[in-house]
Length: 202
Image 1: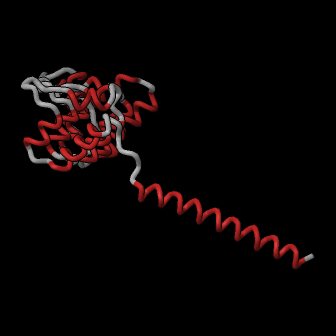
Image 2 (image 1 turned 45 degrees about the vertical axis):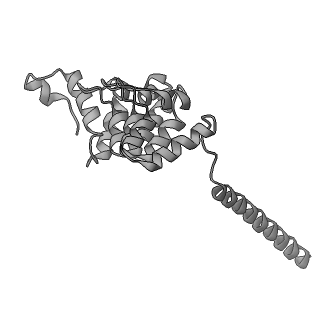
Image 3 (image 1 turned 120 degrees about the horizontal axis):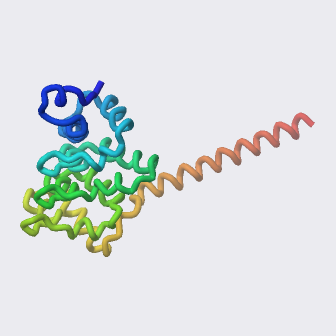
């Protein structure tokens, strides 16, 4: 299990510092003990927004770097469970160089994570897309620099839509309508069959 004892015993860091380090480093790669990390964060939800490494990386930055949508969803889940707005603010936190998780997602082309960040940004989509790092780069600039066309196309489309997020794809909406229609038809057919059987019995 994840504990905070090792660093303290060696005199290198306090228990609190060790916990914060583990909260962030767990998101650094495809963490092999995902259930263990979720259990750890469930016991220490404040670490979601309190934990930063010396460069300012948070759980949300690491998740965006490595395409860990599951970590971002875990953050949202804890926000809903605790009703603590500080937890959700981590998706807009800044690294020491001014990069937000959106800058990270754009730079590495993590479209799913980037869309998630826009959908749940507490300060709004426009604010997030206009944030600049310490040399003046926005998330769009990072995507262009790294030739992440999927992110470039997404951001430009949102800007053209006056920072309104995309509606559900028409195909998905049509599929939902089709399923509802099919379900209604099945219920109607079932009702007709039942009525016919009742009439025959009478």
